[in-house]
Image (tube, rainbow, N blue to C red; front, side):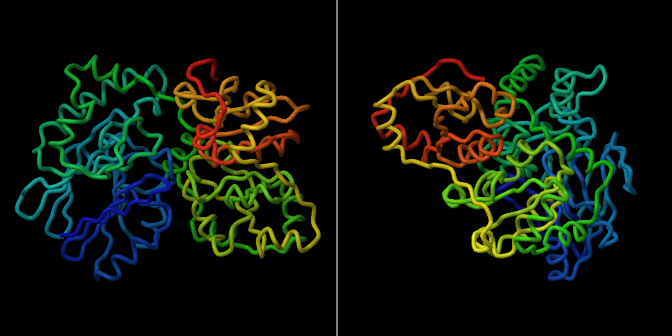
Length: 466
């Protein structure tokens, strides 16, 4: 028997490959199918099942394409109504996979259809649980994403408690927990950087599993939840209803466009120009109205938070050699309407004599000099409110990047506005959005709060935040 976790750091997502005696199962696959078919080809195995723990909200699963290409059966637990062919298992149902078996444990709470899969080896020993978003390492799934009708987040949190107590806690301590996500995912609030653990350790150290009552569990799990990213509902819909084949999405998005063709395509389709280069490169020159969300950061979650429509046409500016990767990473979260990329990258745009824009980016030391000359200069801190409360520049206004679009009326259009975050990634995203909206005097503080703290600028805690 083989169990392999395929972990994708930029999404904090774990998919799983299980193989026994020539039969394989994939649990919660990403959108691309090649990583899984390569493994079965190498092992001389055939994918028999694609198990889905729930309708994922933070990425588009590869279950539909994988089943289409391999003939595998898509399996969901109870309460999962799909628009495509899938097998809807009963609670307690057992599936044979080579010499091992996989048992369905319906564990509603994160969502109504949430299901855990228990792996039982050839000796009958309960070896591992694939928990999806029911149980994480250090946390449990947020219970506020599947509210419908009269159902509240308190109701779902209560269901989650019951599921954990009835289905998970009675299992042996040496059972290995394989969750769908780790630290960095918005599906929980206290997830560990570790991506697997024993159930016994989780019983001892996971705050949610240590709750002494149902009421205490509900209170702890609901405390401190932030708003879910805007794209979550659309991703869940795609996973429930199906989606365009990934091969077609990749073919369309991977078209190389000359500067003239790029400009024409953007104008004809009203495409958003998405520049995924590093912040420093973007600041030195970019296509007017382009938005910068760098690949070398939490790319997919920020795209999902800041581009509200999944159907928005997108034209790409990427570093050389990363064109296909960018199209794929967008498709993983449901942005399937890339119309192509600028052939030759941004340098080709400049060489063609096209219009170029820039953003002033200064060091923390230069920012300190300007602040000392005028301590009342407008400063916008785009970190999260929790970061801002911990420490911030005296007089700064907290307009978190997540909610920037809702607070632009509070930003001056007539005088220089100094924008910073923790390290520089989010501030350049914010500056690019502001620049595209006509704020011509934005100034990026390179290095963010980490660099500012090393200067003479006064840093304090508390004050207002949005």
